Image (tube, rainbow, N blue to C red):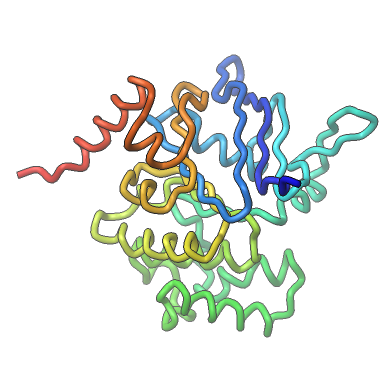
Length: 262
C-alpha cells in the first residue's frame, strides 16, 4: 500500500487576469522529501508555492497537503472555496519562509517566534517560549531572543524566520528563494540550517537558484519554464543529466553567473 504523499498537486492552473502563470501543474512530494523548484525569473515558481499555502487562489485543479485539500472542500462532488477562517485551518500543516524575512520589526525575536503558537495555535506562553528558545539554539541564535530584527544581519533575520516557521511544528515547510536577498557571505549560514532540516527528514519545497545546494539535498528537482514543469526527476537527472536543451541552457547560464569575476 502506497503512503499518501505529503503534497499532491493535480492539474493546477493559475491566472492573473488574462495571463496564465501556472499551466496544468502536476507535482507529488512524499513525506520527508526535499523538492527544489528551479527555473528562470517569471517561470511561476514563487506563485506555485504561494498557491500551496493558499496565499494565492488557484483557478482550476486541486492541491492537497497531508491528505487534505488546501483552501477548498469537496461537497456533493463539487469544490467549494472555504471561508478565511476555514482556509487558515486547512493550511495548519504548512509554514513558509519568505525571501525578505517578513519579521515584525516592532517585536523582539522571541515575540516574532511565539506570535503564531500563542495566538493561532493557542499554545501556552510558557510552552511557546520554551520551544522558541530551543529553536533559536537549533539555528545558532541562542543569544538573540531579546534582540529586534533591526539589530540583526540578513542571515540572522532569515534564520529567525526559519525558527518562526518551525514554531508551529509544520509537516511541510515552504521556502521562497530564502537566500536571494542576502549578501553572498551570509548565504552559507542559512543553507546550513536548511541542510540540517533536510537531514532530519523535514518535508520541504524550496524555490532556489543555489544549484549546489539543490544537488546536495534535493530528492527531486522540478525545472519550471513559462508556468509549466518541463523537466522533473532526481537531482542528478535534472541537474547533471538534463534531457531538455532548455534545461541545459538555463543551468549553463546560472553556472556562468556564479563564476567569480577576476
